[in-house]
Image (cartoon, rainbow, N blue to C red):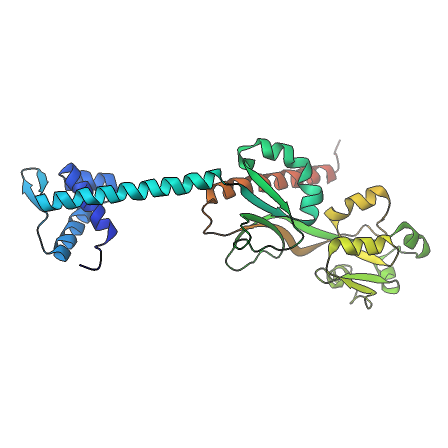
Amino acid sequence: MSRLPPFFALRALEAAARHSSYSRAAEELAVTHGAVSQQIRRLEAELGARLFERRGNRMEPKPAALKLAGEVARALELLRNGVAEFTGAAECEPLVLSVGGYVARRWLPPRLPRLLADPAGANLEIRVENRHVDLAAENVDVGVRSGVGHWPDLRCRHLFGESVVPVCSPTFARLHAIRSPRDLLSVPLLHSTNRPWDLWFAKSGLKGPPPAVGKFDDPLMILEAAAQGLGVALAIDGLVGEHLESGRLVKPLERSVVTSFGMYLVWRPDNRKLPRIHALCDWLVAEAKSEAKAKQAAAEPLLY
């Protein structure tokens, strides 16, 4: 016989032979008595032999069936050991988290002591990479990506949203009177390939922005260009805080606009470390939600 019988039929045989009962086998396998009986009949048809005899309330396995059940039991034990070894190795291996940009430089560092002290951060390996890595090829378990929340063959969870705000150098601000969104139509603008000015101008009730002075695909490089006085850049709100605190950049206007982009946690659905991945993602998402609530509470006026 070149083709093996169905796996569940073999399991039903092993359980029924061990208990000498279809009913107790059904309880163990969490199925009905009829399901076990049907699988045994199917197996008997494939093997061309009777496997059990009824003796009172018992279903006694025939000698050949008892021998086959013993082989199935040994095979099941090998499978259990293999799975245990597999999952045990997954528990011992590092959980690799790939981060970059704002998350790596500003958001994650103050939270690291608590994360590494939590079970969710056990045996965590953090790689700082300013690119979208290939999770499978580079053995990365969880990545943090900026985007709209869709990557083929990957699962994702939203970490936090993104808003953008105009920034420029203090010298540039002094040289150009920028008091309203319309004033930006007559000054040099630095454009991002991923976050164009069109949305910001549309939300401000204005038509398309003037031609770009330069285009940048790196959010940190565009901030550096703005700090050098080359023009006004549209900066990610969270990423620009350090530059504003140091005085290298200022906000000529306070209007910020929420974009369609956001930060997402991504992972492969076939990763054998899924329980650890879910625990890490739960922890990071909870942190992001807690931060959002704190910011909202700080922004709300106090009523006396």
